[in-house]
Image (cartoon, rainbow, N blue to C red; front, side):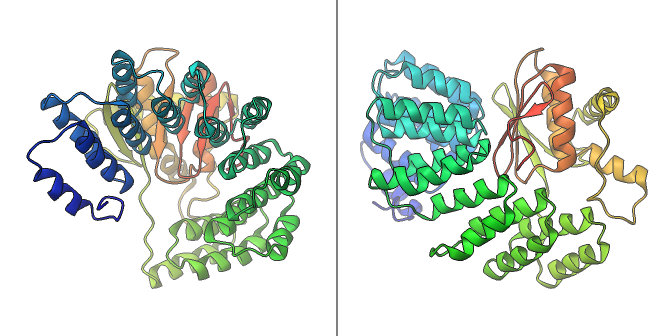
Length: 430
């Protein structure tokens, strides 16, 4: 009860005061930490539980696997999967659903699909997790294939199902199909569209380059749009270089959320790409006046259950010299394939050589280089970033995946990017 009300410290005091603690009380306190976003604490409690000789049940594994999903801790998730199989919980529905969620959110959607296919019984959570997992990875065709299989098995779609379906339509540019699902199929199934569905339609129209139609849809639809919806349109303005509309949308976003660092950064980048340096200066001045500080870019990668964190131009890693040499080696390899550093967003009063140097050692490039150094050939590379991946890194990583013959997955703040043989699953739209 206290955990669900956000009183996690009270819940912990009660738990610590129990004379006897069984698997149910341990699982309950772990679930409380999970519900409050304290994923690491939930996993640490599992270690304490094992030291007391308590054997986990299927609900314990569900909580722990969802904690791994929250942390993108694939290595720990793999270990828990093996542990659950050893104890005979592989066939339990709640464990299977948690495994699909964990693998999808840690960048291994293929493993999620393997779990899904092996399940003897699937509920709506199973189907939704797989559809949304594929959609979040930019695999619209696969997401819709699962949806059609869901319909074929007579399983009733839910509100969440259509969020994944409409997102998939956006990835595929299927505008007519998206409106069919929104206006006809959802109505037939008695599902009232909500803000999330309408936001998906904004994304669908925006990705198709129908910027005016996206704006008209937002103006004409009687729903209270949130900052996520407007930010969706703003990102599209940046991709399609519609700076006039972008400026209007950015003003709306900043009125709704004056301290939204991402919007300031996106607007500044839009001005920079248009070489409107006075606009860049105004945005930076506004950020100073409002005391809005840009969050430093961080990337991290997990190797043999150890997490390595990287910051742009950081020399604190014990192997930083070798990492920087590896980055330079990779950039030298991709330049003959057409890689040209995208210096458009770098300050105009910096020398060209300095601009290239600045771009070369962004945190995701450092993390990818390190994983390539430390893993065997053909092993997948998985990196997480706390901010939106920049255009230059995106272009570089596409070509790095080609020259190294590796599948490189980068999860940024918006979505998963799966780079393979010179292409990205996002289709260069994010």
